[in-house]
Image (cartoon, rainbow over all chains, first blue to last red; front, top):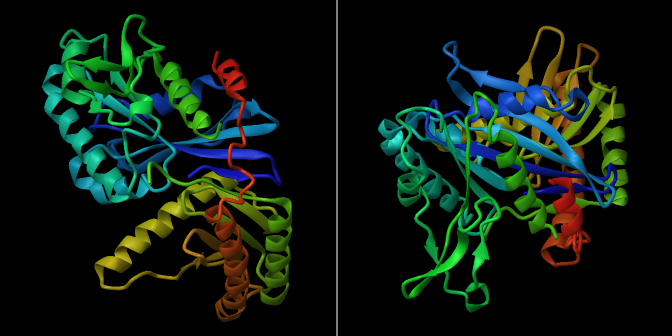
Length: 224
Length: 161
């Protein structure tokens, strides 16, 4: 739920980083915090356990620039990844404008990724949000690890796509991040759409800003 | 719904909110009143400027209120319309406004909880009216924010390189 404040000329949007435990959601926020100029970001808040597992959420507000005289403020949240924190995870999704799913590329985390993605679908559905329509980006993290699964396997498991019934949307949309690939295309008899994906090594910061920019752009385009 | 609906408020909405809150602070002797929307965004601050980071404070307030909302449901209550956090010197009173916004009142020993609660009731009623008008305007499609960035695709592209 973006909030437009005409008095202070600000557009406020909420982004949520979702995904399985220890997948790198907090690392994404920490990298953003470390890299952006201090005058364009607020304080980072972490509600974590002593073992640094996120208990409720991490929070970081950042300004990404000015458009039409409005300051664009993005509030970045992470959710706790562990399965048993679902009640607090669901609360964080309330009023979300854009979602980043941070998947752990390691082969042995495939099941945890799928379970978390299913949980995201279930939780967004309960709020009446449609993941195929709201700004949504999948980040395949930990691409540097030797046991990282191939992108095509991750895509097949986590981003298989959805059928597009609306004739107005049945046209090829190229994937801006991956030349030669499409976000919307005809597969056999059906038109299929899928979410934008990014590759990342969040501990090194690779792909972190690309992901943030991609989802922020999608959010602002919903206002245009 | 494809996603969360956006909402906006104009300068005149803001002035009305300020007037109600200033009146409330005068009558209750509280130090400061903040309005935070349920997604954690700060809408307004009236009274003594807080010494803490208001953005972080707003996100924690929304989380606090949402968590308590769920606790209320678990024990069979529809909601806790207000919450109190009482400290040795500084205290907080939180109340729901129009199911979308939270009024947060900060007060010290100069004010009493009873008076804050009593005066907040009237302030919340006034704020309910202001916010309901704002939300009705959005619902009726008269909201000025529709397509606020219309035609700004180039600017958005430029911003993100």
